[in-house]
Image 1 (cartoon, each protein chain N blue to C red):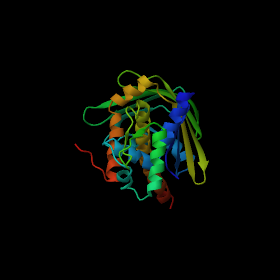
Image 2 (image 1 turned 120 degrees about the vertical axis):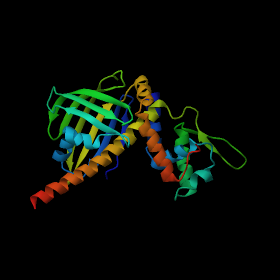
Image 3 (image 1 turned 180 degrees about the vertical axis):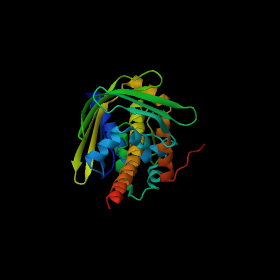
Image 4 (image 1 turned 90 degrees about the vertical axis):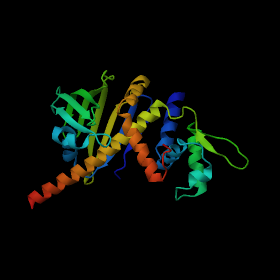
Length: 115
Length: 160
């Protein structure tokens, strides 16, 4: 039960593109909240909220450094399960975008043949 | 909304939902016709599917072979269990890497949604050992590529 719950929590945390970008950034090394907020056109409270979700899901850890709270990836945070689901998502998303184009192309062809 | 929704169902299943801007008949066909499958079911950039067999009838066989054009590849075999065109398919499949992964039973449904189709795919979540094996293969390159894209989009560069 516990495991299933944490799985859902991890998954919910990974479902958001901003949070996935934060993780991708932290994969390169520790960063402060300000540094994490920089590339995004969203407020710092919004970034802090994303950081809290990631932290509660056990994906990142924060330490205290004076007034700063630098974040880093929790050791072993991206489990093989997370990696697998990310891989599956990436691969399916790409397949379905190709399928969108194929369906549009075929619909157009059908329409042209009718007219 | 054509964004992919991927959720877990407990610890054993994955549910994928995606809307397509085409009627169920067209989407169903794209999932069953080998000539069409070969054009989209390719995974990461740079991969192709030189062999695509889908016998398209209950009891029929499925065999998809992927290649990265550099000697890397893997294949999938399966059997079709149930077909209810254009609404629903049930099949079982396994990856060969080269050892076969445990059978994955996949139920795919296509429901008309306005002028489009809502597709739902329910499949098994591979166990930890299978996931590790899958990640260890070339399939993991899809993930690397998506991270690379993510980094490009976010304006970060890897320090390599």
